[in-house]
Length: 255
Image 1 (spheres, rainbow, N blue to C red):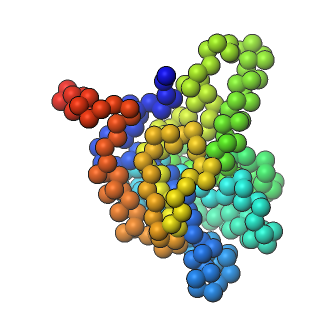
Image 2: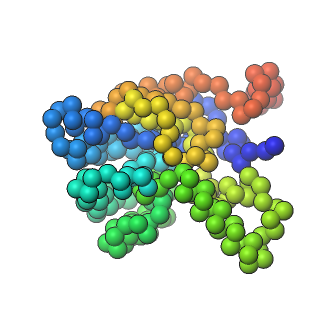
Image 3: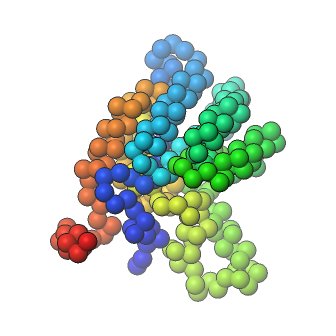
């Protein structure tokens, strides 16, 4: 039995190479203040900016943010509409800030679910920042982990049908190449805010060996101090990838 997660690409030392975040708690933050739900999402934009800044300063290479799941379309129409407007504004304004700071933007998910205007803004943002050499910011939008695995299988099926892929050659490593973000290291650390302790169909394949950190703090209040605590927790953990402590010590002694 093998795994698609190559621990050679995992973080070495105290800083995760790839941090993934489930930004939960916006609605509850707003409700606790007797505000409409969209107020929580707007307040969460500042927390996103801080997460980007702290990540870049800490040396994180990839930051993935779960902005809108494929299940979020089930929310009230007014909230979905407001979220799409907020997404549009962010693509129009925030991308310029990212580009000035040499950061690259990637949007992960089924983009066909968005309006033509949003699809164009996404394409323009990705093109503008494509050659930037700083941290990569991935926005997961209209994304679900099961959808990701299914679309990877569909692509492999087409390759088999066209004679370019032998079914006998398909293994975990093969499937991994067809999932999103396969060109980047898998998330070393997955953070979820808002107190819930589940991963909610987020990067199911990629997070097979991620360290999990659950914060009780609602996303709009998840600022630098809270993020630093998560990074410190990661730094104190031992990642074995199936090995024993003795094997890890032996490997470390040879370095």
